[in-house]
Image (cartoon, rainbow, N blue to C red; front, side, top):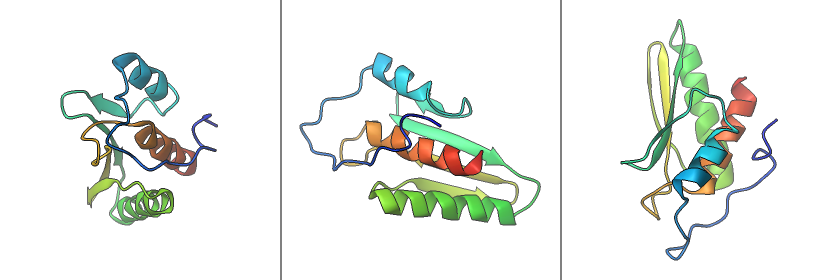
Length: 111
């Protein structure tokens, strides 16, 4: 279990300092290696692959449930055979620890 999983998301405030690239790398190392950071767009993304549609929907619903429970909402897209989850801290326009917390919680239920 990642040490991020027991944490809860905190409200983002405009004065929150940005995560350094080192901070992002340290947090990403606690996640499933399938997560990718796009530093230009400041997003954390993972695409799940399946052999059918239903599992993609289930994964989208899991991400929605976790995100809503944490008050930190993912962008979700899915279709036959895939579900892509994208986290970013919209209020800040960049990544925050909250994005990594939600990703870790999703990892915990999809592993």
